[in-house]
Length: 99
Image (cartoon, rainbow, N blue to C red; front, side):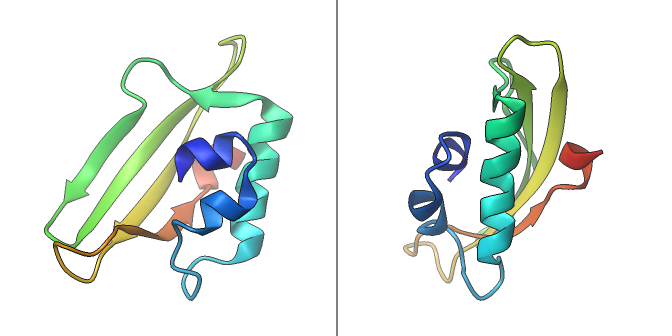
């Protein structure tokens, strides 16, 4: 999901999302912010697990601009129906990214 969003590949990013919980507008907004800010995942510790349970998890994604001059974070929550089901993004919190 994150790689697709960073590359502004909306349809690919959308394929990893639970569409009943995350709007197309939120995915598109994330892609636009990444494009305009020229963000990439930070090389060191790009993801930090906030919690990780059997069927639900939350992460903080650390991103930085291409020249390393600005850094930001945003939250991603994921869920799955069972241990054999794929993870789906259920929430994207852009508050820290847009601050």
